Length: 528
Image (cartoon, rainbow, N blue to C red; front, side):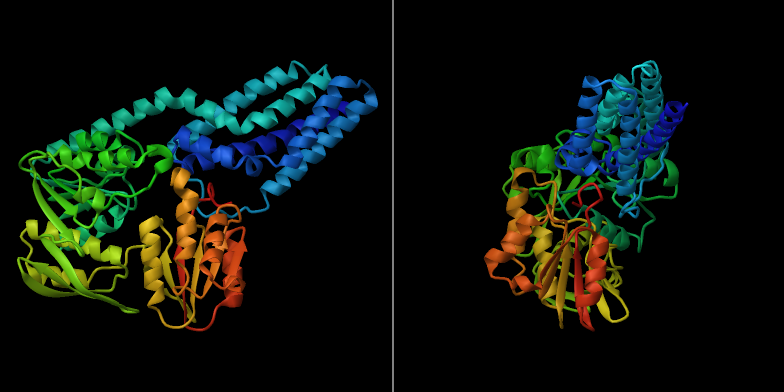
């Protein structure tokens, strides 16, 4: 009777632990864009976070002992020990219950949870078939505990045919709806970085004269674009501005065939998503695929200062408009100046110079504005209208967005980071008065070069920041090394485990009227 009670308690606690693990796995799978390759890379890098080493050792010892020894006392001891381990594990998983980006309970997540539950019920049926053999029973629990973090991969494979069917039906509906509006002008925007900012700026410029539909946030995948079209496209829309993301070969071709834009903007090409693209050549070819697929009546807007774009052998017959700052281009920015109030610069078009001002900060935003001016000119928007639109631009959320707090100012560049924009952000911080603080977890998705670029980022802090808070001891190791090598004052470098610790530390070390740059805000999947 005692054993039966303990066994029931064990199953209840064990099921609670599995449910928490399932939610964690699905959460991380969602943050890895439901892509198994990315998720498995995260699993490999975070195995001890997913399942602590001391728990694995305890389970292994119990499993081995249970197969060797036989006694009533041992059975009771084993069950009590496993119960204690599971309770400790559940307590550890609840240690940080607040997350940066919570799990979004979509229909897809519901289907994953259902499949996960079915698999677990099947496992329990098998385990209960072994209930007379306590030792094998314990051993099976051990095996499931070790491999439970891989169950979501099995769930993904089981659900793939159904998810693929939903995706195709959803995309076909969106494509048909887009085709019904025969007079809409479609703009596709791609690049390694700068896509979302350019999209938002182009939308603000064109919206002064045209009724525009724009993909929200970073909805740059087939499903994200489909959601936008199915939910929001109306006959009144004159322009559809579509961000096109890609982190592996073939995705731009799929998106181009889906949307079929008449205007294409390529903002940049850099070493982003190397973990999935593998080589720089693959990135270049993929990002320029939109240009190559344009027809003769199309238009492409290109960044002349980007070496990989400038040196690419374009064979497309589409019209080309080039913009830049350093290289001679059709539309250029000169005499750029920054202050805590924003940026001022001159735009040169057809050898004529026009003054522009904006509240936006950073050199990369100047490039984004130039792209918007190029598109605006194509839509017959006058210089005066462009000047007013650029002056009235709103801050782009989490992209060098100034946020005044009670006694200090945040420069929020938390959305994303890459080797180019991270340095530009520090250049902006360098121009700010008072104490300058940067909080960052560094960069990801850079493959084998990730440590190199993070280290170079660390070297760039000297003279641009006074204090640095690094978030994630393992993730920011290379940045720390770069700071040391540059001669940065290491007494002003702090390393914390979580972003919440960084907020608490900031409250202690900040001065009144200081500026705090938040450079990148990694999902929970990568913050370690």
